[in-house]
Amino acid sequence: MEIRIEKNMNPKVKPADASKLGFGKVFTDHMFVMEFDRENGWHDARIVPYGNISISPASTVLHYGAEIFEGMKAYRRPDGEIQLFRPMDNFDRMNDSADRLCLPRIDGEFCLKALKTLIDIDRDWVPSAEGASLYIRPFLFGNDPFLGVHTVNNATFIIILSPSGSYYKEGVNPVRIMIETEDVRAVRGGTGYAKCGGNYAASMRAGEKAEKKGFAQVLWLDGVERKYVEEVGSMNVMFKINGTVVTPKLTGSVLPGITRRSCIALLEKWGVPVEERLLSVDELAEAVKTGALEEAFGCGTAAVVSPIGELSVDDVPYVVNGGNIGELTQKLYDELTGIQWGKKEDAFGWTEKI
Ligand code: PLP
Ligand code: COI
Image (cartoon, rainbow, N blue to C red; front, top):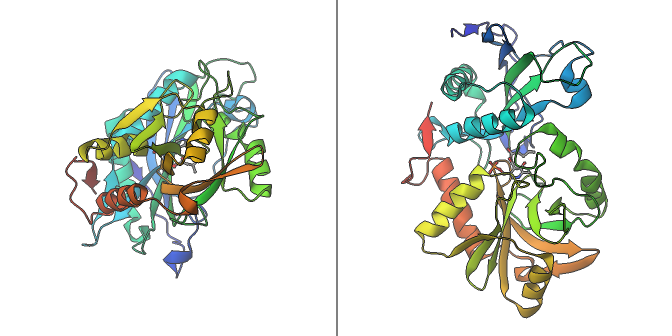
């Protein structure tokens, strides 16, 4: 499929201080869009000036939340070149999400080509400030002008780009996390493993509660027994207990994070034992009490590797590693960001230059 390109004749002024970008607030000059219908498949692929889109007020996405998305980043290397990190993993996961929500699958190779073309056009927007990158948000939604609850015949796929800094205001400093004991985010058989907008909508009430109490995010428990730790709002979690890194196993209600997968590969390469298993809050609390819990951190594209300094359960605080970043967490952060920003050797072949 050809990609039509319409250049933006009124480019925006780029933010003067890239270190103050925040996350997901500034957008580049262009976006990629394509449409789907049952008769023609994906068609009308185009790169157009970034701007508002028009959809029917009856559009499926507005009523039944038929939407999936991805989050990835483009990084500015020290030599000035730009690279992506495991981009096909994101497009593959998008297809898993599409299958779960009965949305049309995408052609990952084509989407990667479209993404590279888009970034090339907006390449001056990729920041070079320390810790900053170009956050990439591909999303896909059902777009039938019809109020019946039914698998869609029409869909739209869009990629927007946002030069961004750190996701948490804390940066790489440890965050405080609240374990949510009332609301649940996902259940097995539901959509937890898919990256769909509805999962995030369901999480906002607890997120707001946590924020009001001064926590950065919520740590979700399993939706059935409300006993096992699952993941944080925008990242997977890992706990170093007596020298072993324990991370919740992918039971169907946890997002299979690409950063999680990468951290596991690095830990295994370094000979650090990793266990993917069920981990209860009681076990965690006990591990804090006995001192067995050495480190805790979250990992995700936006959050990178984010140390957890405190876990709170029903207003009881459990401080991890004296509220400081742990040695292994720091090593993982350095190695992963080193590979992503092209400062360290990429022995796994995870990066792809544009
Ligand atoms: N869990 C949730 C709920 C997320 O939103 C994210 C972010 O994408 C992750 C985990 C981490 O996934 P990844 O490492 O692929 O970004
Ligand atoms: C990401 O890390 O890419 C995410 O999608 C997290 C997001 C919900 C901000």
